[in-house]
Amino acid sequence: MAQIALFDTPAPAFQPLFLCGDALRVLQTLPSASVDCCLTSPPYWGHREYESAGIGLEVDYTDYVQALVQILLEVKRVLKPTGSLWLNLGDTYLDKHLMGIPWRVALALMDYGFILRNSIIWNKLKGAPDNSKDKLRNLHENIFHFVKSKNYYYDTDAIRSKPRASKVQNGKVISATGVSGVRYKRQLELSTALTTLEKQAAFIALERVLNDVTTGAISDFRMVIRGQQRTTHSDQQKVSGRAKELQQKGYYFLKYHPNGAKPSDVWEIIPEDTQKRQTHYAPFPEDLCRIPILSTCPKNGVVLDPFCGTGTTMFVAQQLERQSIGIDLSAAYLEIAKNRCEK
Ligand SMILES: C[S@@+](CC[C@H](N)C(=O)[O-])C[C@H]1O[C@@H](n2cnc3c(N)ncnc32)[C@H](O)[C@@H]1O
Image (spheres, rainbow, N blue to C red):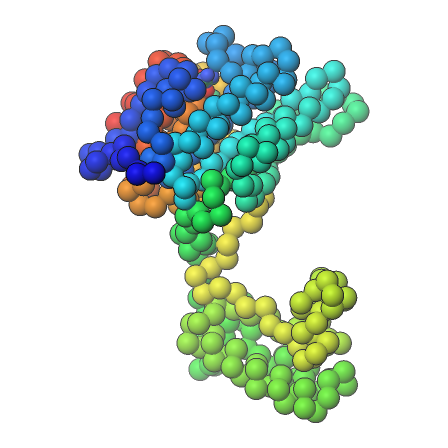
């Protein structure tokens, strides 16, 4: 199917397009395969009222799941084949039962053909006080990364943390964390767990890796030698490729990517309170938007948030030079969002 461009030419200063109305109805007016990435946080079931209308107020949780899934399937239609959906959802207790709402939605979306790539734990670090005496305090929310097809857009390098550079010590290049190879060489010399041939091969491999540090092909490394370092993987060769390497060669290397480390699926981000919770209950932290937008929307691409509230997604998309479309039922929130992006 031909792809229709929502933005023929980039809007000035990446000004977002704001559309007021019910997410499902507005989405139905958008062209298919026109959006690169959708990042959204719908109202959670039974949590609070946004102008006493909209999704989240259903009496039965199954109605909420169904209504939300219907909207997100419309998102699927407007996503390009290479597109991604990032969905942030919190859970709800009902009569002592933790309802598992985020996963109920996620499983339904998978049944409708969305591919789940990551289930991210957002560790909020700071939480509301919890006076209950029979359960733990809740401090996390879920963020799911779904894709429309296996052949999706993903820029890993855009989200790597800045690598620590190697340094020079006594005229020799050593790794960022001070690994010079001297200790490994000594361990190899003294090893009784490696044969002479294995030791020779390990020395040659170590010299090669040290050369990679000097040339900047890798930023850092660790060497694991049979009988020396404690391993965290299984010892069974069937289960672990590293156990197999250790068994067959007597050593292996952990090499650090020269462009820095990839973020994990646990994100530690303090919830946003720059809005002071007077105008809106639950704005996104800006930091939460960076990885989804940088990794799954190319520059000049289009980001969508069908529950955009005060427009955090649009604001970050604009800063990162992406086009964006924000939808919300509330004209008042959209006014805040517009002002935020025009500043
Ligand atoms: C959790 S808030 C989103 C907050 C947003 N991420 C921000 O940073 O401000 C959910 C938003 O969904 C909107 N909403 C609720 N039902 C809706 C519907 N059916 N269609 C569109 N927006 C809806 C609410 O007005 C609210 O602003």
